[in-house]
Amino acid sequence: MSAQPVTQRAPQLAEEAVKAFGTQLRGELIQPGNARYEEARKVYNAMIDKSPALIAQCRDVADVIQAIHFGRDNQLTVAVRGGGHNAPGLGTCDGGLVIDLSRMRGIRVDPSNQTVRVDGGCLWGDVDHATHAFGLAVPSGIISTTGVGGLTLGGGIGYLARNYGLTIDNLLSVDMVLADGRFVTASASENADLFWAVRGGGGNFGVVTSFLFKANPVQTVYGGPMFWPLEKTADVFQYWQDLILNAPNNINGWFAFATVPPGAPFPQEHHLQKMCVIVWCFTGDVAEGAATLEPIRKLHPPAIDFAGPIPYPALQSLFDALYPPGLQSYWRADFFNHYDDKAIELHAKYGAQLPTMLSTMHIYPINGAVHQVSSQDTAWAYRDANFAQVIVGVDPDPNNNERLAGWAKDYWLALHPFSAGGAYVNMIMDEGEERVKAAYRDNYARLAQLKAKYDPHNFFHVNQNIRPAA
Image 1 (cartoon, rainbow, N blue to C red):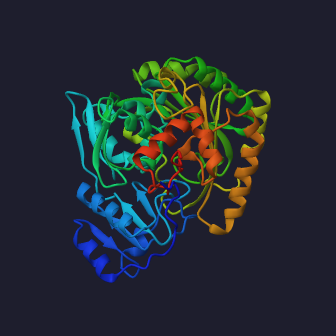
Image 2 (image 1 turned 90 degrees about the horizontal axis):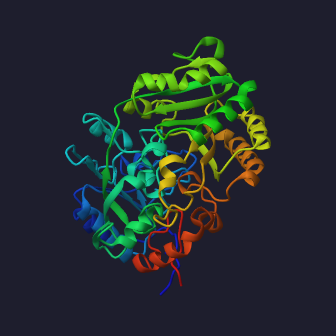
Image 3 (image 1 turned 135 degrees about the vertical axis):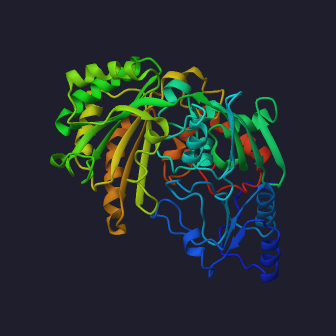
């Protein structure tokens, strides 16, 4: 049985076969020449410019099954797109078939059981809107336009991780279509090995058409960003690290370098200044949240302070307008256990060199509740790491791409020796098999065996690919 992926090539498809495929879909089949093709082929990262032969915008599970059969029968390269936010553009391909789930946006909240059923094409803003009405939330990321599918299948790091775990730690079951077209459910009691694999193993095992999540009591949090001048980096970083490594789980805050946008609500005297930032999220009584952050306000008074009571969906969408689809993005990432003085010094050096206004560096805490799950309990292997770091070069102008990538690579190379070795799969570019293996550590061998069981021909290979075990 071959483990080789189908060769990526422009297909020579019979017109009648394509027409027949289109009539089998409730959704729309889009081809080059269609008025909607140029818009439909775009992904979030404009650095990715690919031209699929077909885009199947599925409306339901039946459409997904038909698309998988068509792709397999015609030996097409197949990519699966949820929200399309993936940095290396793994939701599209050249010359193949894109299974686009963006029209599958149904959500049903069950407030009595505190669960939410979410279709595979939903964005996190859809989920936040639906659950907030019931005083609930599912742990996700920090941008509400991110797709539920990609973020979840890679693990899910965000504001609620220290308190409620990763997104996958709140996943109860998935419905999915496998490479042979079978529809299955995976949970702790049904196809448990597959359920283990999809909790961190990415899109390697099939197309997830719906997710069932546990939701948690979250409504108004005490959160938002505080900004300090770059010369305060070492002091603020050390304070933040010490706090986060010892704080109760309901306190979260991620550290960043950013350039202050030149507009309201930012004070004019700080426009376009490079600064260090902590974006807080305290899930609990808002008065307690204010008291928790009072020591840092006294010891290291921020130059700009936007932290306060805020509805959770508003915190989740705070940066959406700053990072719309269509920007050029280049990412590099690593996990870390601790930052010593030398690592902090290097951060200060490269943080001062942000190449463009939108370029940034984020460090997300992944201790607290994340550590309460074993590295063997899910495919996500870095349960002992304390931080997930990502360096992101961003700009609207493609002429700056080389500069963005050069800064990100140099920054990454300087800090990588201090890292835990691997990186969060949702934050790496298309960096090759060794980086994928490093992301999964000892779990990789089991994932490769399950890949051989559920996708032996590596049909789903447009992803951070796990090759089927021989």
